[in-house]
Length: 375
Length: 246
Image (cartoon, rainbow over all chains, first blue to last red):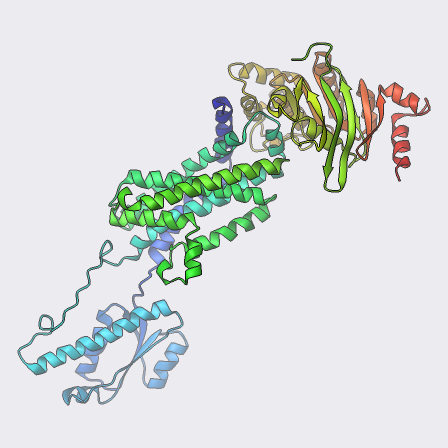
């Protein structure tokens, strides 16, 4: 290892990176863009599902019920339908995603304790979106019933007199806010996708332009070459982590409860693992187009199986097992743990060990394979 | 270490196979220090494979070679430190300026405090003039070629390998290039150059013809011509050798 050669390599990589404005913009703007899109647009909890109302009762009681639906914030009334069929049509056409049908005898049925029947229709084509609405609708029904029963029993108020009172306290994210879950995910997502792609392309480009062949006849060693490639992207990675943390913290109120140092230290491990994977891909592909395709082959499981968006607990065993082979899975656990739970190395050391393992394994295999490709 | 009398390059029955194909078959050569040596042959005759083995880019299947006093099989790192290599693709970074390319290769060859002087030398010697600040990608074919040559000469290699250096370069730039090459040889650099332009063969002190991996003829241009009937031009020899192939 010669510091002089390594320095030449690093200076060259920085100069090239700084001259490649398109990539530079990509690397700096995309993380913030993605954060804004994901942070503002994506709500894993469905709020304000468009609701069509068919109220055949037209009484104070029926209007109160509709208000209670709206009060859950799961529903927003968009239309009043004149008939049951019209309410169905509104869901068919997509104007509404749910409908409530209140029968003509609703108020009378309540007074006579005959069991007033209210039908709620929910468009369940997207199960996650409908689940919240279904739960909320059932809860509205139960609450309304409890209130009525309480009044009947006399002297009881609706809230404190329930015989069984289950209270759920959501830990770490009491507002159940989606950005809190998503922001740490985005850090991992962006880091791995951009870095894997850029490193894979950077080596393949050297091969395509014939500069790699030229480098191989110089005394530059493989390790110097790899480290030289790594240094600028390591900096890029840290800038991206910082940008997403700052925007996430100030715009989406993501708390950073744990140690920033631990975030950066594990980010270092993760960046090295991602770069190693990128270099590995570059040894599997000779031209930029196949390198892109190979990279995407790794990126898809990253999105789907790492727990970035979809809970790993819900996955069938094989998918969950494949997820365990992704560095991102461990990095996300660490990020969410440190950022949201404020936990540290004492709890997260197995994940850190896994990242070290990935970093060493990818880098070693890439360097060894790289040697063979030269011949 | 080489002495003045020891050959700069000794190739001993070197062979390289790619699967069933034998790209170079038991080639043997001896090249003196300061010699301008040509490796001629059509495309696919094994020229590039031979050069790559001598540069330590490719391991020989059998046989061996010593370059600048080092064994290409067992001391490839020492070989690399003492040779220069210019590939057909020139190996320049198009998004770096001419000077940045020079500085990068200088650094990679471990040149330290001497770097400024060597970059100035290459700029002057390769007639790069005011081109230092231009991106390598926008230079003409001849300018790229001379810049690449400058990059491979910064560390004062004892042996310089040129693989089809004049492909795609206009005649005026080719003449300038050969002037520079002859100057370097006259100062003691051993130069080994492949080409399939027969009109360039007269530049060489000595040359070999390669055909399907075999050394077919060797000697000075005059000797090679004489061996093939005296009056023949090298181009005639070339065609004669080609015709003999099945």
